[in-house]
Image 1 (cartoon, rainbow, N blue to C red):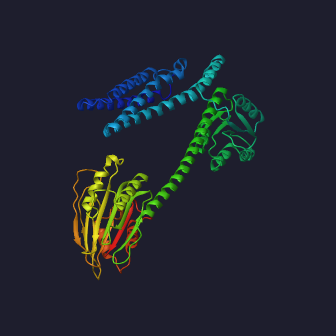
Image 2 (spheres, one colour):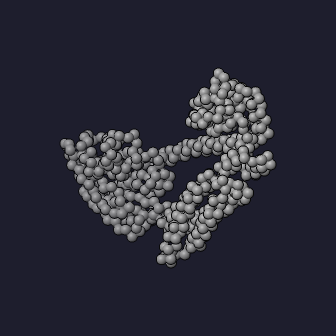
Image 3 (cartoon, rainbow, N blue to C red):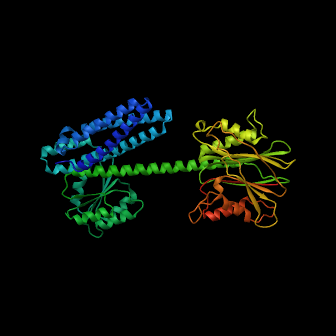
Length: 547
């Protein structure tokens, strides 16, 4: 008898191996064209391993179950897994080499090869598990007594038995309970027994178990009802259930499986089949238990990470400046997204007449982006560049660009708006590196106010070390306001699904009544209302400077 599923498996494995060989050929051609050779050996090893695995597919997946048993399932697995593991190792090594050499496209190709090997591994795992647990056990019906003894020895070597499992037998027949207990205890299990559904639930409240073997035909509460109640109970529904009955009724079997039974056995059971079914069910339960443990551990880890991120966010906020009052007022709002982000800003007096103002927005989110943002902010506050004139915005931004190149910052870049206001002649000198243009609101008694953009083109920091930046200069009239902001403030998705444009954000500021009181919080509430969200998707920082 040909193995069930062998044809499908053969087709799927050949498909994945053909894809691997195609990607290998493609990468080989590219290295020949570019005369690159640092992963040539890996390509040769991958091709050889894939071909070896293909040979094993052709060799073994046309054999019958009896032929595979005579060869030895463990040996068959070795024939498949040896070239597969060799293939995975070669692809992983090549991927690491590509990372070192910054060969991004080739690295992605090796990622795809590794993805295909993962699919192959899953297919083989499923095939060998089913071959061991189902085919071999069910075929035991057709063997002689000597053959069954040989098969039992084979199963002992091929399958991992769960010898410390606890099994609850629920059956109203004393003889059936005793016979089933005898077989299971002989196999190394701990057995507890109940003669009714009511007694079973009482035992389950007192003791834990790994498997329930449940009789369908019982008085008072039949097996169907017990199974339904088990699956409705949040504390018990995870326990696998094997239904046992003298009924040879496919409709009953289907009904039990639909309710939630793990498997089905006849009361006239074969000991080898019983062992295989019990082993499989308990193993699945153990795997589910481990999965729940992992989920719980991940949840605890996430709680700890959230706590650390919250502390990090509080630290970033503690570095932000206090509001300024007097002849020059500065107010702001800072609203990071759900993740720790890369926004920061500040202002400080360079001397008694000149105020430096800046807003930084690092690409991405998380601790890395926040660390880079805080580092840049501290460099500006401490005036750490020894030969940089901090009164000249273009010179400051150029120094930042030379220092914080992407390849040295884990491929992160940032935008910045930097300006210096001289209160003696009311002159604002500023420059921008990829940041949104500032908005100037001119003195006005009515609504709408007069607004204009303060453009200052320049590439974001980190892309090109030789980028040139230029200082812009304007005179600021008394009663004017300037707004600096990160793109997260206005690049929102509105309730209609469209994105807000910068012009719409300008119109919002233009139409808000200003009575000498800070507007950042009001502006932010308006944006939140337009988005229809409790929290924006991106970090949002907004500074208002009142002259």
